[in-house]
Image (cartoon, rainbow, N blue to C red; front, side):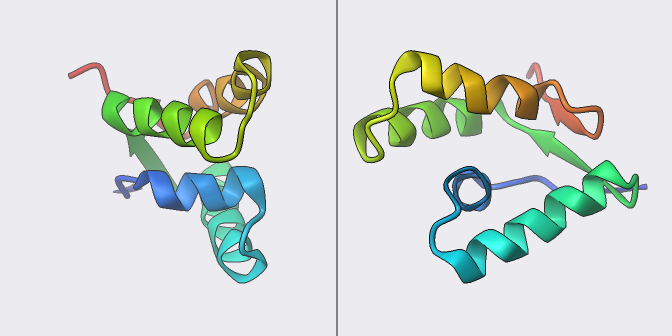
Length: 83
């Protein structure tokens, strides 16, 4: 199985739906992971970056951040790297 390290920008597009064309591409990548075509290792640094951007730029509350990130980091084919 192919491991594809994911950058925060890809996940931000998926989570926010903005801009729509990039969000669609990110959605397709997540679908590939869900179907078992790829595995998406995820660095703790990327998770921290997601939290920062979602709170500072998108003005998500802590609860909103938890609601969108927890399902993502616990998804079967997304592997949170523990360094």
